[in-house]
Length: 365
Ligand code: SAH
Image 1 (cartoon, protein in one colour):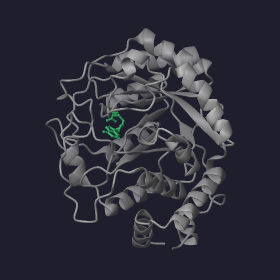
Image 2: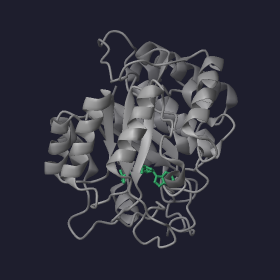
Image 3: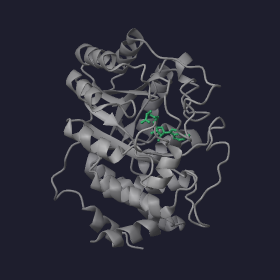
Image 4: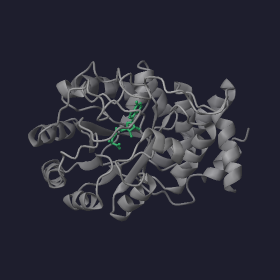
């Protein structure tokens, strides 16, 4: 199977609107998920440790230029307490996420990671943006297990337009992911769906890249406009007519399902952004169309509403404990159960799941 043929098939699926065909895609993605990663839904407690940011990303409400946002940074005690709560709720992992905050000093982050590892034994995922190699190495040595850094879009020109550099050469997030892998991290990346200027061609390439990078984790969510950002104030799409990917729920499921077919063993969350655009059952549908991870929010309430990467985020209504009680019921209703242990990526022997090329072929349109 060559790359061009895959690209053609992926494009056709991304443009597919026939309900019966889409049903077949959802079913295939769900079967592939079951064969590749089983029925467990791994729970990762998300702790949004700071909303300070030095960057000017055109899509994100945390951008430095957004003066309307009150800023916070959690202290060590608060972060360790949230990690203990994750442990008490039975989660296997905590994810420490933040804006790109140079105020989170390297040695301080290392100390927090070491404390979480020794006091809770949880797997630790970091999502702290583009930091120095020395810092990544120091955090890995302190015990951090995984690093999330979405490449957001494989369209270089679009990425550079929405993610301005800080004076140096443009960020090469693919090279950064390779470096993180060399350091021994499990690596996660992903994209937003429906960024103004994002074409179907580029999303098909993003999907191929997920497989080429052999990602351990893949995060996919809709782009949600934030009114206090340049993109959210209505930058017009530069995509040719008919080529702009819409930032709608249906597109997110297609990309999620195709990502699962291409990467049967990856850990793929049903994201908060998806749950935000369909608060009723977006989370469930994501888990039924390829997803196997849920990231409940453990950020203390007063901070949670300030971690406003986009507006009206799902998870602002309920405390972690209340959400957790409902989460168990929601999983049971899907016939799934919470995973136990760290839920690391498991490599399945090559023979087990159908290779992506075959999978794409067998559901040929
Ligand atoms: N500073 C870190 C973490 C950013 S928040 C970093 O840059 O890696 C995590 C993800 O939220 C981002 O990678 C982006 O894909 C997503 N995000 C940011 N703004 C968004 C928006 N307006 N709509 C949807 N997703 C958004």
